[in-house]
Image (cartoon, rainbow, N blue to C red; front, side, top):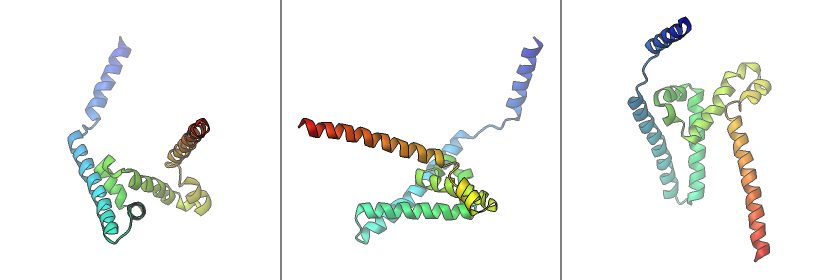
Length: 154
């Protein structure tokens, strides 16, 4: 009985000390900051298209600018403040991915450029890259198998 009572006391203590998360406010901030990042991307896309570039090149330019901008803001420690404020809203795949590569690289810069920056740069993004590359290889092999069979059957 003492053990059950002490566990209950501990749970009460943890609940008292744990801050309540303002879920509605966090969702709102994530929504408008993520939307603002997407609007910036859309503005860049529209400018590129108005200058006569096709959609594929315009999309590539948008990706490059958003990656470069988020890496630059991470270097100035501004993107981390945006991330604390917006939460998941700042993790739109391109900007969040650039941040996940630049942050560890900056953190381990003191260990040298090869073993520090080069070795630790992909600690967060590494599993994402491995999964993405592995999945694309598997999908490519499956596509090749089914595409080859349809050619030989016809």
